[in-house]
Length: 487
Image 1 (cartoon, rainbow, N blue to C red):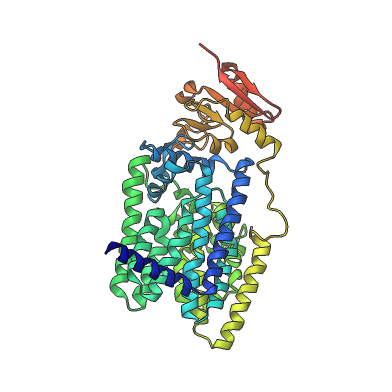
Image 2: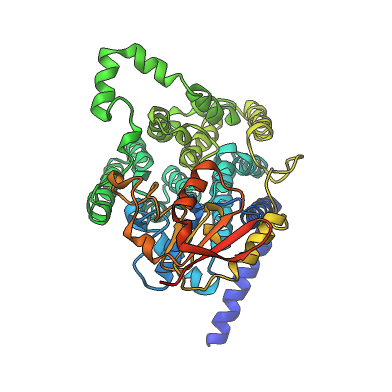
């Protein structure tokens, strides 16, 4: 009997595969090719010393510790992994390290998850616009988007999961597939505390569309998750609910509001400085500004865009960094919803305009796999990278080490690894900024220091202040490995 059931299931699966359209297979192939291409490039960048403690090494060490059932206290930054951000989604990543531990795992996962975000967009566009061809075109628009690719090539961040979860959540909300919707919202809330900036507007859109109860539940879930993440998890681990309050200018939220009313000229000059207006152009231009055809959907990204623009943290209002990824899904899906409101003839023309605009913007601002000029980086075969690899083999697996930032992601699978000059001089370390520049007692336990032969003035000064305690253990043309002298 069971064999007959198995035969029926196999036959059903075979039928489903045979009925899958060529367009669908094309989109799957495009996603796979994009993910493989970006993964290979990321691995080459990583192996060529193009990654760093921030923000690959710290996640690699933290996830490695989780995979060993240890507390994820990340010595590269001096904080618990979940005190930095409430990224509980990483608990689901840790089992991958039982099979394939390493930075390459994180980078590959990031590429494939972000590329997979094209699938819900394709299926939604195919259904909403009644055209698999246009759906495929919008999958391409996602894959080449500058902000999407900027995230892929900016080391590693758990935010990359939002490149899949947020499109699924928005599409499920618009198509009333509630089971998928709640799964996507739940997973999104596990990624990071500030995803509330998208979840709350998503709930508001639902409420305005007549799904009042689901909208209110979504808003409540988003706010509750953010408060728990910040005031329960993060505050208990690092003593404060967030370390990023300084990013709001004019003294914080109240100061910014006060400045807006008392000295609006200052606020205007601030908001139009350092390329902030260009940031908005780069976010909307790939969609030929057609996100405005469905403003209620595009508004899901409004809080993120405003928050990034107001921030005085340069990375937030530049599309090359992960802060912008979460805003892209709503802007793209708004185009699809908007095109559904025009005639078929105009729809095809406007879809073509969006594709052309996206490819043009990608050629200007993106790191797409098909770009003609090579992405600038050192490859794995670069002499400096090969020489660094030689040094790694001489460092004992359990040794406590302080290393140059670009070698940290290659040596992070240990309980104590520090980015030089930490812990000899505290720099960007731990939640207590009052200790900045001081020597940490942890420095007495450091057994090895790995540094390049050519040091900048600051690192050279730090090394000279402690070099008497170490001797040259191994060296080559580019690197020096120092070991602590015996007492």
